[in-house]
Amino acid sequence: MYNNMTAVRQAFTRESADARRADLIDATAACLAEHGLAGTNVRAICAKAGVSPGLLRHYFAGIGDLVAATYAATSDRMDTIFAAAVAGAGDDPRARLHAYLTASFRSPVTDPELLGAWTAFWALARSDARMAEIHAASYASYRARLGELLAACGAADAGRLAVLLTALVDGLWLELSLDSTSFGAEAAVEMVERAVAALLS
Image (tube, rainbow, N blue to C red; front, side):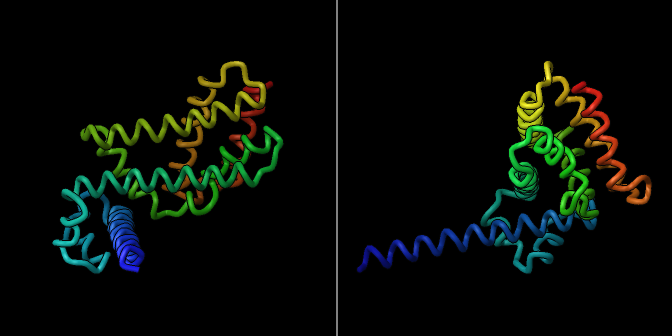
């Protein structure tokens, strides 16, 4: 009985700690989205999460550690969204490729709040080695999966095509995030599909 109760308490403590860390990460993402990097600080994050600064320091070494964790968590969230899009597309290779590429033009990836967070992550990746590593790993994973989907469609040079299409999707996503009326999500989907058709012909 004692051992069982101890295990329950330990599991509850771990779950509670994970939940607090997740709350702080969510609050950091929200602050970055609303205020940008300049307005994201310990006070703003803790106010958003409804916790004391001491709790932040208990779970993270500092704000740099927390922002890095937020970037990693946001990247993981995007990976899950893209994987779900592919899984829902069935077995046809072209349909799976289409779903992967065009998920960037669907909610929640198109949520305006994401732009502020991503621009902060990209800016930090230029000067912070840890953020640069997260950035490199995230994009390498995206391109690798895209390369697999392209290869399944018969692409001869899937690796290079993955780089090209990643740049195309990123550029269209950024334009849509800055101005949703510029050409629209459906137009972006059509442009990507035309590019894929030309590259695979």
